[in-house]
Length: 226
Image (tube, rainbow, N blue to C red; front, top):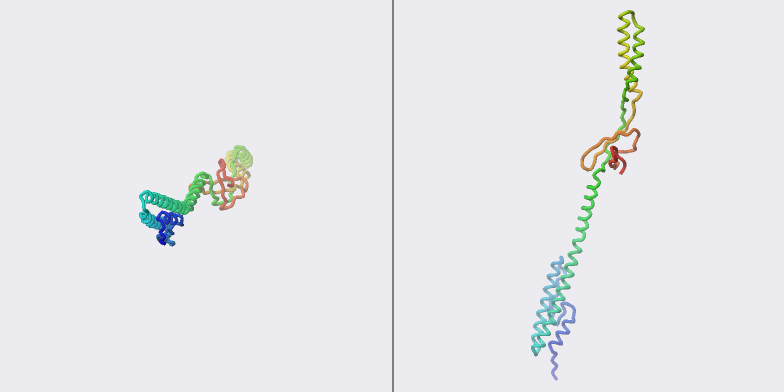
């Protein structure tokens, strides 16, 4: 008794097997493909070889209707295999691009933050300096009176008058200088370099506690810690 397996039954069994394991064994995709595109090309080649093998199998069907149905089934399997391979390729490409996108986003956010903080800067120097006080008319008048009185006690006649005038003039100068010294003050000068390259110098009546390298930002006509 001779047994003949119908091609449609053989094809159905072949289509139910995993990709690359049809009855006419197609070459498996290259395992060492290094890129998503290369892996997709290898899978497509294997699927195409399997599809051609299935078509040859379908041509052995006895009737036209059976051949057509067999070829339709083979085409469905081929198209589904290509779609799955493309999905794997696209997923791999997206995963490969993700780190670059993250880096770009981080760089953009950093640049935006630097732009927003245009008033931020760094202390480049801190020094303590003496500032002379301002002389007022009161000091000059008082000095002139004292100087005139002292000059009036020197000499006689016109000489006394000259001494009085000289004493008054000297008293004005001395009074102004004394008042400047009395009103002298100590200030702390803080120099800052800003992110846009500009620089500023700020005076404080008391030690602000800044040190070279401190991060600061503009606060009105002065600066404060960031």
